[in-house]
Amino acid sequence: MYTIVNMDRKFYADKLPRKLLDVINRFNETDKKARSFGTDTVLHLSEIHLVEFIGDNEKLSVSEIARRNNITKGAVSQTLIRLEGKKLIVKALNPENKSQAVVLLTKKGWTAYCEHKKYHENINRVILSCVQDKSGKDMEAIYSFLEQLEKLL
Image 1 (spheres, rainbow, N blue to C red):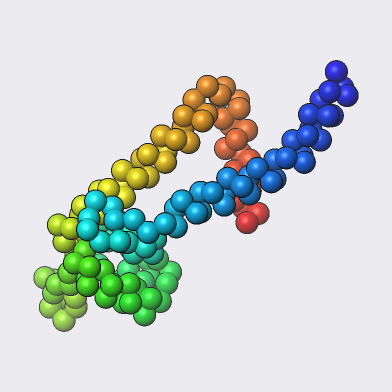
Image 2 (cartoon, one colour):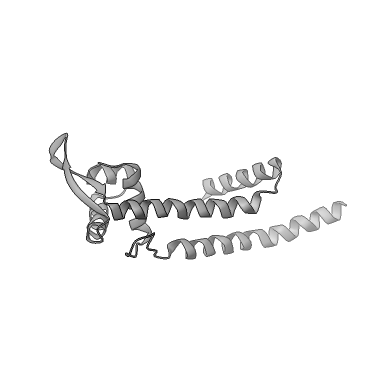
């Protein structure tokens, strides 16, 4: 029995890192693909994530969006220009501070936002379908492993 356990550990020690990298790479390939998210416009990852942030936090200024995302105002402004050109966002005067513009989603922006949420819900379903038959102890081990890995990266 001891030998079999050691053989199993060696087998998984050899295979697990490669399998994890394969899964990460496959996920990244899939996730980085530009998608339309229910609109007639192709959206890149940075664009849809900014749409998501705006949908979750409407009526923020460019400066506040940049601060909360820990990115430069220039990066936010460039992405907003693309999103405005794609008719996903509009800038409007802040009713509480007329000298400041705030960012709002358009109807098309809300469509992309909702479809992006559905996309993530689908990913969640796929992941949960892979672990639905696992015991609580197994789930705890998987979660603990992922937490440790995240901290090391």
